[in-house]
Image 1 (tube, helix red, strand yellow):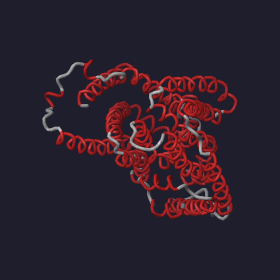
Image 2 (cartoon, helix red, strand yellow):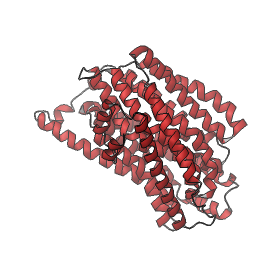
Image 3 (cartoon, rainbow, N blue to C red):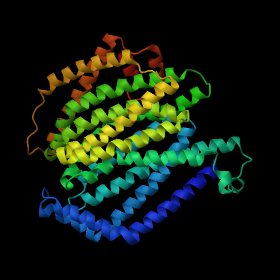
Length: 464
C-alpha cells in the first residue's frame, strides 16, 4: 500500500509542478489580465466596487496563483486520504470529514465577509478558500495516521525502508492503468458538465455571479443530504460481491430508498424556498432562483441514478462507465452551443444539468440489464405523495412569511433565515407524518438507516 501511494503521489506532484511552473512563468500575466478584463466589462459593478478587485489582481496576483496551487495540492492530499479511508470501510470517518469539507468553505467565507473590514474581505474569502480544505485534509490525515498505526501494529515486521524498495512496475497493481484512465475520464467529464466549467459560457461577471450563487445553493443542500450516503455505497456493494451477506439488488434498493427519503423532499423544499433564501443573502441574487429551480431536479436526480454507477464500478463494468462519460460529452457539447444563445443563463444550466441526467439514465438502465437491479417504484410513489403534502404545507405557510425590506440589516436577514429554518422543520415534520400514514419505511431500510451516521437519527427513526 505504501509503495502504491508513493508512486501515485509522486506522479501527481510531477503534474502539479508542471502546472505550477506554467502558472508562475507563462500563464500568470495572461490569466490575471483575463480576470481584470472580466471585472472591467461588468456593467453591474460601480467604479468603487471594481477598484479593490483590480487592485488585488494588480498587486496581489501572486496570491491568486498561490491559492490555485495550494488548492490543487490540498485536493491531491484530500482525495488520497479519503480513498484510503474508503478502501478500509471507514464510512463514518469518511462521511464526517466529507460533511465538514462541504460546510467549512461557506462558513469561513461568510465569517470573512462579516468580520473583516471592506478592504480585507476579498483577501479574507481567498484565505477561507484555502483554510477550509486545509482543515479537511488535516482531519483526513489524522484518521489515516490512526489507521496506519493500527495496521503497522498488526504487521510490525514491515519497515518503511523495506516497503519503499520498489520498482514502478511492482508498485502498480494489475489493471491500475486501465482503471486510472477511466477515473481521469470521469473527472474530466464531471468538470465539463459542472458549474465550474459552465461559467465560461456566461456573458459577463454578473452572470457568473448568478450562476455561481444558484449552483452553490443547490450543491450545498445536495452535499448535506447526500454526503451520508456516499461513503456507504462502494463498501456495501463490495461486501456483497465478496459474499459477506445480502444480495446486490437488495443492497441497491435499500440505498435508493434511503436516498429517495432524503433527496425528494429535500429538493422540493429547496425549490420552494430558493427565492427567499437568496433574498437573505442579497436582493441582487434573486435572479439566481431560476438556476436553482433547474439544477435541483437535475443534480438530485443524478445522485439517485449514480447508485447504479457505483455498483457497475464495483463489478468492474468499466465499458459501461466509459460510454456514460462519453454520453455526457455528446449531450453537453451541442446543448452548450444551442441553448445559451437562446435562453441565456437558463440555457447554460440546462446544458450541463441535462448532460448529467442523461449519463445517469444510461448507467441505471445498464445496471438493470447487466446486474439485475430493480427500481423501488412502490416506495417512490409513497415518497412522492408525502412530498406533495409537504409542499402544500410549505406553500401555505410561506404566504405568512414577513417580507424582507430592501434596506434589510444583518439582524433582519438573520431573523428571516430563522423563519426559513423553522419553515423547513415544519415541512419535514409534515413529510414524515404523511409518509408514515402512507406506509413508512420497510424494516430492512430502518435497519440500514440505523447504521448511518445522521443528525437526529433517533428522532428520524421514530417518525418513519
